[in-house]
Image (cartoon, rainbow, N blue to C red; front, side, top):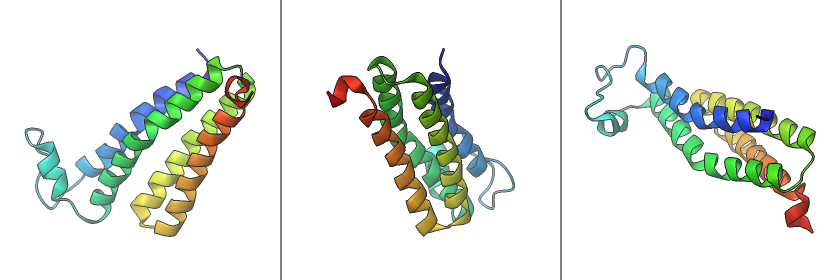
Amino acid sequence: MSIAFWCVFVAGLMPGLTALIAKLGNPEIGRFDNNHPREWMARLDGRRARAVAAMQNGFEGFPLFAAAVIIAQFGGAEQACVNLLAMSYIGIRVLFTICYLQNWATLRSLVWLAGIGVILTLLCITPAITA
């Protein structure tokens, strides 16, 4: 399996890992309620609420990234480029999550834009769709 496909796997796990930031620790509203997780998360504020928002954004962006990697991989793009871009996307998503947790809104938006740029680049380097 290519590095790029491993990055798709990691990107798929990242939203769940981000959710752990909201769930663990010493919440003011009580322990995580697995019987009503969405209601429990809706009551969060501050950093924990931002962790939930970062998780949701991860779920929203994942299909675009996964599709771009698959299209590039099977569309004839150079494997080294696909791998590098996929690893870059993972780094960008880590930075995005940090920005979200720290409430750095402007930087977060710029980092998000960089992630979209990686996805577009994956599509643009694919000979099968650029011909």
